[in-house]
Amino acid sequence: MGVVPMNRKFGWLAGALVLTLALAACGGGDDNSSGNVSSKATTTTGAPAATTTTSGATTTTTTAPAAVTVKAATVSLGNIVVSSDGKTLYAFMPDGTGTTSMCTGGCAGTWPPLMASGQPVAGSGIDASKLSKAPSGQVTYGGHLLYNFSGDTAPGQTNGQALGNVWHIVAPSGDIIS
Image (tube, rainbow, N blue to C red):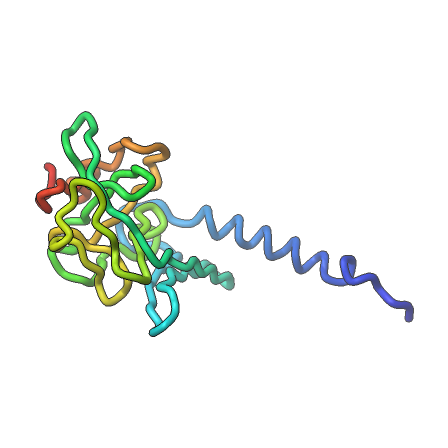
């Protein structure tokens, strides 16, 4: 038996990993917690918060940045709360003003939570006293857990506004924009 070069010996493993990750990224797209993709946020003392997504036999962990900035921006709907990259931030009405997300499974794939391992930073137009972080690491503003929408692909887009009458943009006042 000869020596098999390392790249041939493990090439199938790398290919399988890439295919598995690509398939996991395509999971779930409904607004509720049904589906076979689950998402949970975990925080470990001294380590960054992470979002773990499991699909079948594949688990992908994305580490939240230590510092997350939330700021205000003006769009066609008025003055709104956005992430540091200018993407619109939303609140999910079933969450109420609690710190536990009701958006799990396929929902979390479509509506990724805004996560931070460190204290979130109040950018321009944001009241720092209204900005916080839930025990899970999810950023809150005005008592609302904050989410991005996968259908917003550029800064300033508001494609998720009032979807299912449960997703609403958050104003810099902390109020929901209906």
